[in-house]
Length: 330
Image (cartoon, rainbow, N blue to C red; front, side, top):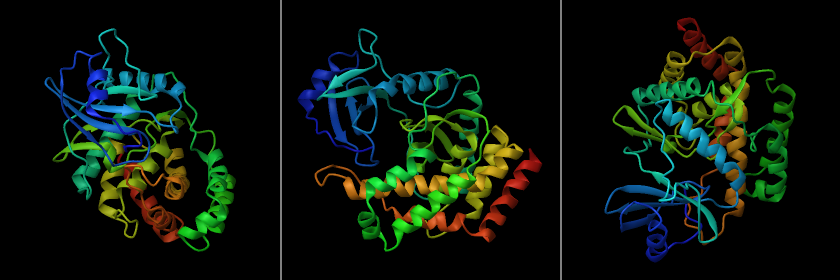
């Protein structure tokens, strides 16, 4: 979440008049995240999230996101609903942007997860994957393997090496490796693709919401597990791996969905791919974020350090041992 498009209370009050949502009481921009403009909205009736979709989100993809969240909500997963206006429409236009009013879910995002919270997140991810078995709509992964070399080019070698000397060459070498070794012929399904701690709401050790599905796409389930593993199982700066968080995340996922042998074998490569994806998008945002945007830029090197971890054979042996335990228990 972030704020690129500035809104005033008068604009939001006019927008809310189309809904049976009460009158505006409080309005606050949400600086976390990098994708869309988001505001916390409190009215005389309830609380909501107001989202304006910025340039990286294709408006043509919004019906996919709507259908995905509707499917998950009806399956009992803890996800926010799009709120319809008085005419039953869920998609609006505000300040020249597509906009939606979205259900506010109780809970907070943790910054230092506990083992119990990691396990609960693994369970929630597994339940989500199970619920999407019969979800038919598809959306290509616009930030998948085929996009990474192009994205690196958009950053320019000078820009990448300005972040860290030699980074452009390291990224090119990693693209070469992943293109040669990327797993094929695995089942594809709708995935979240961005389940960081700030996209999981919790009360204590209980997950109360999975949010921010705007990178959701059709891809391998193991890649979604890898994204979540890389996001949850390290210190925020990527400098330290937490084995207990990893063990509990994988165990929770396995208990809710299972980890089959092909996914188990593919996970180390998927983890490297997840790190490269977030390294690249963070580099791009670091270089290109407008100076006046109310947005917190995220350190690209935090994912270079994670990538270093997953490239180390000894670390992969430890990870595969954890996966083996989960696989045998399943």
